[in-house]
Image (cartoon, rainbow over all chains, first blue to last red; front, side):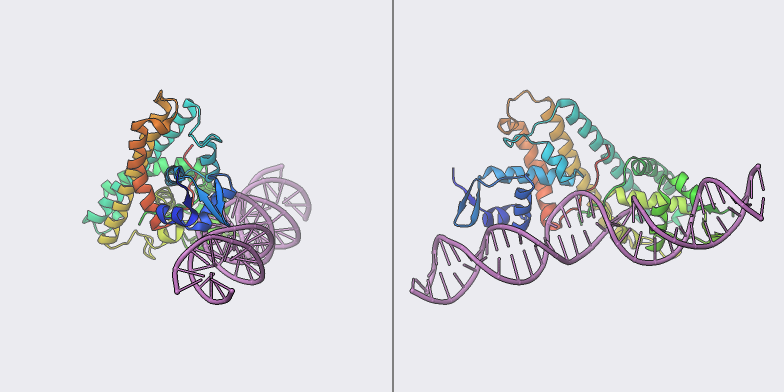
Amino acid sequence: MKLLDIGEVAQKSGLPASTLRYYEETGLISSVARHGLRRQFKPGVLLRLKLIAMGRTAGFALGDIRGMFGSDGRPELPRAELHERADALDRRIRELTALRDTIRHVADCPAPSHMECPTFRRLVNVAGRAAGAAARRKRPRGLTPAD
Amino acid sequence: MKLLDIGEVAQKSGLPASTLRYYEETGLISSVARHGLRRQFKPGVLLRLKLIAMGRTAGFALGDIRGMFGSDGRPELPRAELHERADALDRRIRELTALRDTIRHVADCPAPSHMECPTFRRLVNVAGRAAGAAARRKRPRGLTPAD
DNA sequence: CTACGACCTCAAGTCAACTTGAGGTCAAGC
DNA sequence: GCTTGACCTCAAGTTGACTTGAGGTCGTAG
């Protein structure tokens, strides 16, 4: 099984080497050898990094993500927990959908001030209910928008 | 127009007073008076906080959100920019949907190791494409999952 | 065989978004 | 008029996820 130099992994994953070192240090990934000083990774690390990226996108903290993998590198979580995560994602998706609709409406609505547009107010209410509840559950820590 | 004490705003919005002060300090909201020392807000601040919460949920940084409001407190952004944001949200929603499906699949798939399940690999590929691209665009900064 | 560039370690710095703490002020109720 | 509790300011601390910098080590191309 051909090994990948950290440089190759960086290039193929799009992550800087410093991040890969950090991920290894915190136990998210592991290198299997050295070539001189250079870390060597199994190709499977790329899939793992993909999964990590997915988790990050979904808003999970690295610690959470670490908990989703067994020490052997396979995803391992009780079904109930996974369903819970999936449901949380569902809620999040609904919030984002409402927000997207609100934004699109604002972009297209001809009303002089959105605050006076009933459609806007309705959308804000739908989206705001969820967002408000989320704020009360736990304070979010910004996630850069995919721009 | 009746004014709201910071305590009332905190209670109604679900945000701690310290956060409200912080938001004011950073120009996201503004108080219109004092009662003794206590900040007094216009009722409209509640809607504004809702919008801020929505933006946070969508993954926008506070600085971004600040940029979405005119100095008078009304949302103000060029249509093009709004459409761009909405499209970014759409991409994000698709990523999350793929991730949700992946997680649900993992929860229900009877295969001994997910890595060997073709359905899993396909889902990862769908979701991973987007997430990988996102990673390459900009590094995300974790957003607590709505638990 | 020497130079080069890509990697190494380890400590410290950064950034956003808040929170916490010390010490102070005020309006309202008793 | 005094206490009380909710608020105030300002500086400093926290957390997560990295990045940066200084100083060092290799393997390979020339």
